[in-house]
Length: 341
Ligand code: NAD
Ligand code: ZN
Image (cartoon, rainbow, N blue to C red):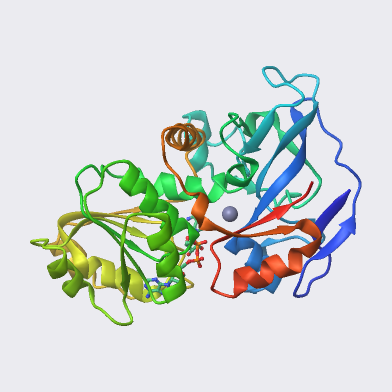
């Protein structure tokens, strides 16, 4: 099969011929139809410090996928050949206290496909049946291929009650934009989204009913006044990973505000902790998706009118993967999807 591999300890990825994976009794084999390129994959392409410390070589990369089950392990029940599916790319153990308490997403021993284990940028993927998420007919393979990052957005957005609340999202990347659409869908009042990249803010305004704010040009106090809000935002979602964004968010929050942090800052971030204390702000770190509650809720929302399809801006055949990565690095893209059929 064709597969996109980190074959050498150097920048880039290479399309190779690899054996189709053999499955164990509890696994399924998935024929991949579409994959999404993630920021994580760009880190692996660039071979930055994080990637060099984390990713073994050689490794087939990729973790955002949709496909169809073509083979089933002998102990697998409730799944059929021909079932369209996506799946959770975090492989969990069975030993930690968190897993034994049913909090699968908090397993300290989690391993990621395409990061620690063979990934989904390939014509076939082996996955534990436990990780499979069947796709209903109305969810396309394109959307199926971005359920992993949509899940990040949904997990973050549903961290706090948003009904009637004024919501601030910092970072209009694909995940921030999808979180804005989710916040609207579940009944937030104002949803403002910040970025410093006008192309990203334009995309946000096309995909969701949001107030785009270029923080290079307008400060958030002016936005709070413009929207007629008395104090500040009730709920914040940090989705930029930029070190100044959290500080800006804390300043723009109301008393008792709640912040969910998904963005990963490159190092220690300066933030005025006394402001967090005096404003009595709650901050929650968000990692991955709740397994499988986030999947359940996002599929239900997609079946009930949540539309994030506009966040996909580029589609390429898998053979043109280099164009896909170039689009990702351009700063002009939303999600980039590769076609493996
Ligand atoms: P992205 O890099 O595509 O988007 C980030 C956006 O933030 C960019 O559009 C950038 O222009 C913008 N930005 C830069 N400086 C800013 C500032 N000062 N204020 C506001 N915006 C600013 O990322 P993405 O794929 O949408 O992911 C969002 C974040 O979530 C990233 O930091 C990513 O690493 C992180 N992430 C975390 C998890 C997790 O499990 N915690 C999972 C996936 C992604
Ligand atoms: Zn991803």
